[in-house]
Amino acid sequence: MHKVPITENGASNSEYGTSRRRHIYKLLNEFEVRRKKYSRFAVWLVCSSIVFFVGSFFFRGVGEYAVIVGGTGPVIGIMPMFLLRIDFKEKIIPQVMREYGFRYDFGATDMPLDDFLPLLPVFSDWDVSDHIWGRHKSVRVSMAKLKLSMGTPRAKITVFSGLVGYFQFPKTTKSRVVVKSSAGVAGDLTDALVSSNQRVRLEDQEFERRFDVYCDSQVDARYILTPTTMQRLIVLEAIHPGLRVLFQNDEMLIALPNERDLFAVNFFFTPIAPNLIDAFLEDLDQILALVDTLKLDAKTKI
Image 1 (cartoon, rainbow, N blue to C red):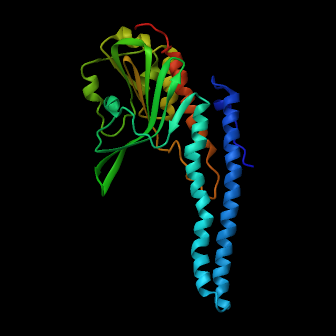
Image 2 (image 1 turned 180 degrees about the vertical axis):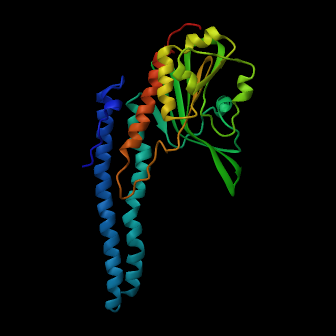
Image 3 (image 1 turned 60 degrees about the horizontal axis):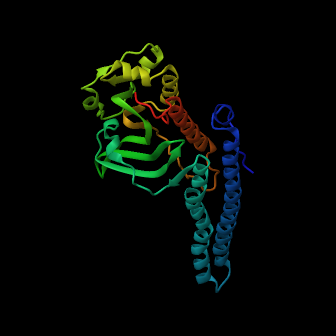
């Protein structure tokens, strides 16, 4: 059975617990047992169909049966693998999200995309999927996979692909604070957002090198961007160049560019890639740790 490793920087040192990760890996290992079983059946049926089809040339009277078996056998053999891919989206990932107290729908498209426009590049077409929502402590959480493209149907280019997150919390901010990775992304729209604000200078040189911060109040920006908060953002930005965060009123919005498909089910006769699942869980842990660091569940005003 394929074993998913518990990474030192992921499960062992995570604030959210080794036991949670172990249970998630147990789910993935159980799924891997099913995938192997189905793949062996598919290989056996496909090979048997090919042998029967080839053998029909040496035996009279079975030609039409050979065509039927040779054509339908591989389809029947591969069908369980396709169903398993759907099962992974409909059952396994929701179970993983329940470990965090969240719900999941791979086909949902009800993310408030308009709220994220200040953080996103210019686009002509968009696709939202893999919606995650629920509560982390008293913070309302809503995240989804977002892909933006620009151009005509025949000549499209991807201008953003990654995760967007919306967090609503009891704490309110009087100022709008924009944290923008210096890496940037194509078709930058944030100039309109930051033009009315002033650039905030911070003492952390590493953070200054990686991010541009804009706010109409230097005091409010520094109140939000504590040394621990800045360190959390540096960790995320190292994995997701182009990271943007917006604080306004009682909301925090975050855009995490990511080239990989966080919910990829590209396996067929090969195992699922545990590193992708682990990378997503690490991202999720880092985001929730950022929420905790900011004490967004505290009923105070900045």
